[in-house]
Length: 187
Ligand code: S3P
Image 1 (cartoon, rainbow, N blue to C red):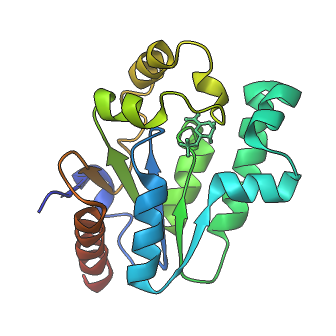
Image 2: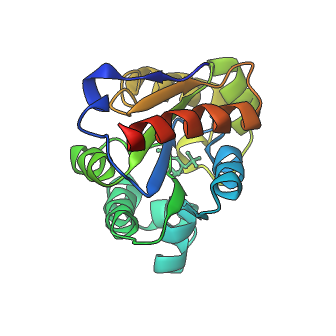
């Protein structure tokens, strides 16, 4: 069993949440795990970046180009709030910076079972290295990953459950999440 509940947040986040939110740095496997998890739970799967693009009619790079990161964060907060109000059982994958605002963290914790996926720097760089769709990594992607990882060292610690995905298959990550989510709803 690889998932470790966070004792500081586990208690207030117990309950019958019908939403599981995945948070984590870019390239930690949120998209892959969310697809598989939604399938295994029989729930719908939503990606907050895709929701932002659908609502705005613009791509993530276009939103950054238009109004900078602050503007993107405002659109992201609005999308997250709408997703947290959904009634349908949902697995929601979020963008890596969705955790940066306290209001976003509070909204996620009070409406969902929040799972942080972690991966080491080498895996992250290998996964996101040359991706033009991630504005924050343009230029020297390796240096940018290192700088952001450093700046966000503790940003994902608020989650109810943290899983280091190193050496785990997506299926094993899903099993760890389901086991902890099941426990959280039955105690
Ligand atoms: C971001 C992560 C991206 C996307 C945007 C900003 C971040 O999502 O929301 O480019 O600040 O870490 P992924 O984590 O899905 O790449």
